[in-house]
Length: 210
Image (tube, rainbow, N blue to C red; front, side, top):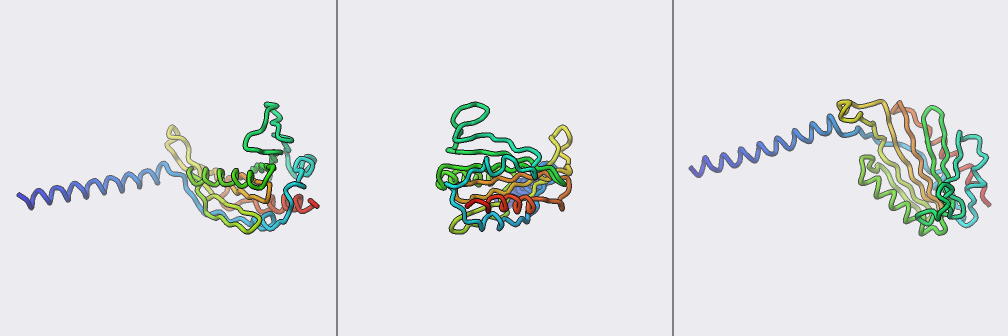
């Protein structure tokens, strides 16, 4: 009897483990987004040595023809849409749209202090770690820091049977002194990315700050 009882308990435990394994396999196969490592060169921006209090990102980018749209979200701490104080101690806030082989949006936030910028950067970092993007690389030096998410291949919603799509999205977030630069990219091809070109473009603009 003792042998049969022990055998039954072991059998039940094995059955539970098999169910858990199959559940995870089904979830990863039919519901979890596909993730691959993102390779990006942030050095052109990350290696810059600029003084945050000398940065006026609005003047720097407002007439930039390399972007299809330059939208000023906040200026001098005031949100342009609400006409109220901008959250997170952001002084100036820009959205830059770029449409080439991929769709990209660059959000540049200028903060009153580097400490405020770092707080915002860390919040972005934690948010990406909690959601489906995850972080595949992060580094920092004495002045600047960055992280890159995985490239995530999206699925349709459950009504579409959660099938994998040909939409790939990823983020890179860089802190340079008082600035936080958040780059979002959406592509229909896993092997096509223009982040490095945009990073060099932004670095070129920021390097003109004296």
